[in-house]
Amino acid sequence: LYIDDDPALRRLVSKEFERHGYSVQLAATGEEGLRRLRAGGIDVVALDHYMPGQDGLQTLASIRADPDAPPVVYVTGSEEGRVAIAALKAGAADYVIKDVGGEFLALLRVAIEGALAQAKLQREKEEAEAEVRATRDRFEALAAERAVLLREVNHRVGNSLQLVSSFLLMQSDMSHDAHVKGALASAYGRVLAIAQVHKRLYTSDDVRTVALDSYLHALVADIGASAAAGNGWLSLAADPVAVDPDRAVAVGVIVTELIINVMKHAYPSGKGPVRVALHAPSGSDIRLCVE
Image 1 (tube, rainbow, N blue to C red):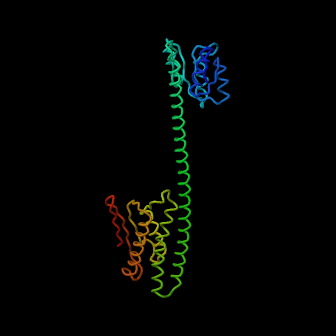
Image 2: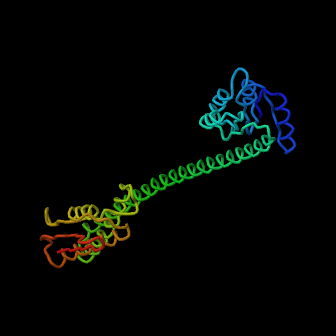
Image 3: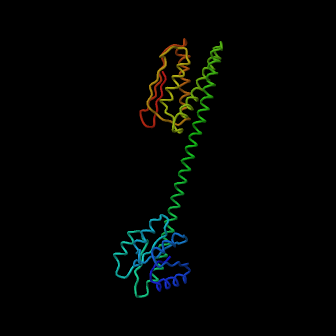
């Protein structure tokens, strides 16, 4: 769209650009140009400064008020550098100075081609950013859905294992065979160790790690509650340590086996203090003690 009140220059610009493959729309005033813009289908605007009624800067402001407006190349007189600067500050993509040497049309074509290329790059940049945002939103939604699913799986598995451990404990209490009772007690402890890991996972925001100190506190409390040795016989002192779930299960099974062995061999009567300690003297080493 070329907006200029000079009819001869409008015809000249139209012929020149149509010769180079452009489809040119013409407007004699700023108001007429704005009406044509509102009709749509305009890729770039060349806008003259001096026009009757609404001048170029006023028209430029109206064009730029539309967030989807096409780029504007501002056309000024040869002595109007100050006006060109004002147009650039107002949002023009480029400016061309009318001259008497015949370079105006060539310079205008170069400026328009540059404005079109710049607008294309800007659109591609915005589309790429929008795709990045959409991908990030999809990833966050999938991650949230996966976290909910993992918590639900851990919750169901944990509940099932708690139920199995309760059956084992009940069966152990019903048996009068010492060997059977011992085997069931060992199985109970192992199942309980795994169940506590799943319980920690479904109550945690991070399913990649387990707080080993909190896990052992819950495990020791469950073992202590299930034994008939009275209160206060089993204690734990643990430093804050985070490990992966598989390692937590291994540590839990080891602690359970050691406690059962202590109860079986150190205290044949089933009574006596047992102390569990977990210390992390350095960032990579963990020391576990059951005594």
